[in-house]
Image (tube, rainbow, N blue to C red; front, side):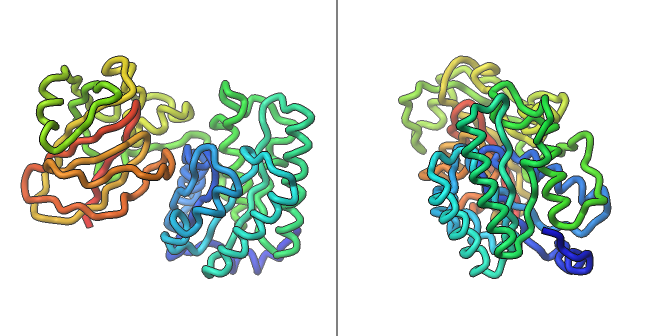
Length: 346
């Protein structure tokens, strides 16, 4: 579907826009959204505020159910929708879900953008048939509803070397193709896709942590935080743990401030307790951003966050603000083998 240039120009994102990326693990890993953001910045184009709403393993049905919590709570003006790789449902059911998502997005005065699916490395005939059916539906909906459509599947067609070892998740070159398709769909055909991703530390990072392994059945309370830290020999970590090529996905996240593969750094376990310090110049309120496998966060001995529903790997705000006192504030994190925690003053 061709859109006249003047219409495209009128629809280009403005700086007041809020763009939410809805998707599965391909979105949750945050690579193509970061590439899009960097591309617009380097081209000196107006950029919206970007928000990630991907969750690994999610389907069109799951995305439909969590729109209020993960998308509309962010008051988006644009919502890109990437669903299909994890779906196992008949084409008709998939179509109903996508149409319902589109209708809900429009009812909230936001613009939906559809992304055709990626594929997988060495797909079977069954997988190809499923994805062809889903992509036909996406193209039909885009044409009928006059939506912008990012032709991701067409970018992948006939190309090799676009996946990591699991054969499902795109590597950096695959994510560059997704970014290219999305930029084209929103009228930025002339904006180059960066050849290398720049991954600066996220705001509010606590750089130094003391980390110790816990038994998987350990119970952490306000009363035993100090005991657990004292009884378990800890390892001092300074983030980012490693530098390296950001095209390798773990390095991308390490360079942004995620602590990854704690079991390889600290010792074999599936549960870890980390302690750090945040110095505040005055009493202030802060937003806690959590990501990775964070299970709970404690500030000055008080639990201020406990995960009840998984909201994705990417860094996202906890529901409640936390009050920081002037001077030293002790931050403790209970996590699996990865965590991200930052505190951004309001």
